[in-house]
Amino acid sequence: MSAPPETQPKAESRPKTGCYVYGILPGDVELNAEIYGVGDPPGEIRLVRSGDLAALVSEVDLSGSLGSPEDLEAHQEILDTTVTGSPVLPLRFGAVLTDEDAVVEELLDPHHDEFVEALEQLDGRVEYLVKARYEERAIMEEILSEDSEAAQLRDQIRGADPDATRDLRIRLGELISNAVAAKREEDTRLLLSAMEDHCEVSFVREPTHELDAVHVAFLVDTDMADELERVVEHLGNRWEGLVELRVLGPMAPYDFVGTAQEPQD
Amino acid sequence: MTTAIQPGGSSSARPQPSGLADVIDTILNKGMVIDAYVRVSLVGIEVLTIDARVVIASVDTYLRFAEAVNRLDISQEKEGLPGLVGDMEEGGAKHKTKGMLEAAGEKLSEFVADSGQDRERQGARRSRRGED
Image (cartoon, rainbow over all chains, first blue to last red):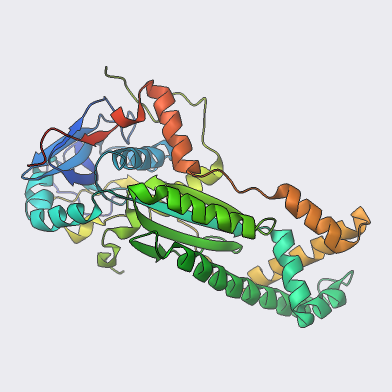
């Protein structure tokens, strides 16, 4: 159950607490409520400042583990709430440094100018995530009506012994899978072109479900949120009955903070 | 006014499972990776999480799709409706364009409800006093 920590603990006197880091903000922010973050019991959120930067942190007990639904939600809630009042560079879940001094000396100070510049670019902008999923029944009907080979295979497997028709089933499923992928590509293009004039930049996420229709993050000026709403509503009407459409946001700009630097295994 | 906001506290308004899936997709896969910036003071802590789903088409996927098509036929026969009409009606009834700002907005309102505070007072807020 309990795997060893990923990095080597120092042999002597391993500290009992660490400093969990949520995100990096401009130095002129203030906390005006007591907010609690990840961990059990949850640590109180603090600001660690240096130069023109501040980091949102909380103390975390290193003998426990992180990753409960409450932890995950706390991490995102804190960042998504923050972004409505200040630009923020959100960190991926699970970032823990030894203490607040390390946050200043190893995170904020050495990368000061880079972070300040990134925060300036993000000022006044928030992320919205547009997620849509095909209604299984509707999309299957549509594909069968468009693809005669699939329709024919459907007739062949109807009521037949599943084992005897396994190859036909695989072929049918493959046709449908390819058709869904093609529709996803087409609908993603449609969404991107509809949003072209309303967002700064977009990022197409990988599908997380076989029936995902679109999964795109947009970095949007806060005053353009209404435009985004209009575009999505328009698409929602167009896709009525075929697609279930959701918009998540405003969120911290998770998809727009240099994830390219992720180390590869 | 200071109010404690405890995400793990009252569970009167638990988010639906899809909400958590959305959270996982975002904060485990996205966001700045601290390892790219910090090495010496990085602390290993056990992180128990579900891996975000990755979609890879496989024979299993194909068989599942074929089964979905099969189910389609069965339910049509049961309903005794001319297929397409029945489907369209059901599809139409099931269709929801969920409200804008759904998940984060909902969470935010829970957050606000918990704290009894204005959303603008939550979290860190950029000070308006000095733009340098």
